Length: 464
Image (cartoon, rainbow, N blue to C red; front, side):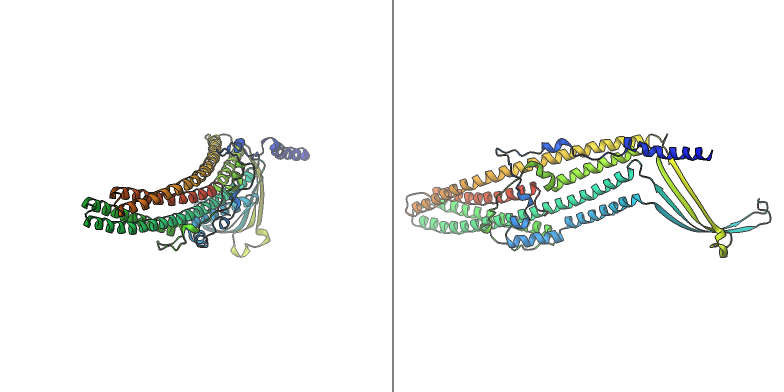
């Protein structure tokens, strides 16, 4: 009889383990949407070489810029916030690892009771009880619940690591972009100041021509107005330069201050701008990596919610010392112990488990769509940056030719005016076009630098 009872108990305990192969938590498999990542280009790259794997020091060779990037990575507020988020996630990872181990609780109690005269204890008016005990509890991971919870925690941590890398990548790009913009503004300020000097001399010439009876007062005022126009442009450029300096200061984690810098002419990014193949975005671009870890987290939490439908096996044990007298508490006669093993199967719980499972499935689908969107956006940004570089390069050559033509036209018009063979309007128009063309040429050079930064960030560079 005892043997039959033992076999019955063992069979009941073993049933969950036999069912594990049918209901155990599933393993994550990368979805097929990764094939949707693509670049819009006439020359789809086949080589896996990509600038994303380059350190930012290899791309941005200006030593002053390198110092600013290092300063930003050390002091930027967003970076420091991301590091704290990683610390939070790491704490949950440690908690997930501890899920495999039993829980142990210790208690120490002292109880004093006063009884009424008519109580069941008769003449006993009061009693004391002292207890020192410990309780051990352990849940068998039959369905992979603990394993999936740990994997979900691991995915969350890796997601925060990728988010930190994304912040670094964006910070490096923003610092470089602000620095190059400052250099472009310096160049435009220099061009405008030279124009102001030229127009000041032109105003003197126009006044001399008027005094000689060749020019008119209208010509003098037109030339004077053009001079004021250039001065107004200079004021705007200097204000913009100050604003960019303040922005860069904040990126560096410091109060607004003057930014030391080199010149636009010294910047030369001659490294081949290799993009690699689209599938490399999955391993290089931090926000795409973070989106996939978010999907993994949702997948594992769906596993966890699925296991709630099945019974859980819990084994518990407790023991310690219990006595009515304090001096006999740690006596062998005061020892007590108990062992409990049981299966718990949810039956009716107000549909909470079903709701939790349906919600987890919907959240997993959301994470999948967000992963897909991250891939599509990444491909678009790479395509945009590639075309911007191509367009900016072509525009620079066009603007160089245009600028040379306008500058020569301004020189010729001034010479004709000095010799009385032209009027002041021709000179003013030529000088106006020359200034605008010079400013546009500087802007085009800056646009190419900004497009290279955008491509570097879009491919996932900057965090290594």
